[in-house]
Amino acid sequence: MAEGPTKAPPGGVATGKSPSRCLTMVQDVDLFLAIAEIAGVFVGFGALISFTRRTEVQAVQLGQIRAVVTIGLVVIVAALLPVGLSRYGVGGHGLWFTSSLIFLALVWAVTILSLRRPENRQVMMAQTRDSPAMAAFFWLLLELPIHVPLVLAVLGPYPDLEPGFYTTALVFHLFEAAFVLARLVYWQASQPSA
Image (cartoon, rainbow, N blue to C red; front, side, top):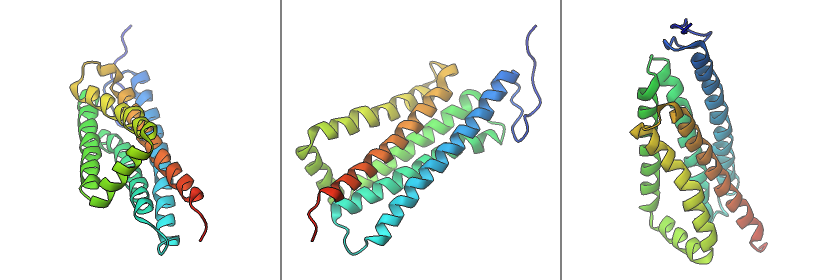
């Protein structure tokens, strides 16, 4: 017997999908809210570092602090976007298309705006020159797994996998924030004491 449309789950939105599909969206909401909370910790920690070490911050550190905070903010917005859109009844491919397109636009806007700053370009070039393996790790193993799933969600060749694609991009963007934060912490630890 085919499953028919369902009523909205508590705190959820009626999707017209099977109960198992509604449960998946409720689980997605919980997951996305948890990811937003984790990203908020990165934003707070980055902001705390910037305020407590204001007089000691060098250009490299400032760029990394900005990156941690900015990546965290993008993750928060991207995690909450499908939650908010689903509350207006947007579902299926429309939800993941719109969310993925906005997420991609945010990632590209942040990257372009960051690289427009001369000090950020200099730091990126120096880090690439000094540690090509870390640069390759960043661009190939963090950035690529963010962009490819989002492009697949926008194009829609695998509609059943779109929530997974979106979640993958979110998690890798969170990993990226952790990676930048770890580089900042280890870079500070490697600097000689004054």
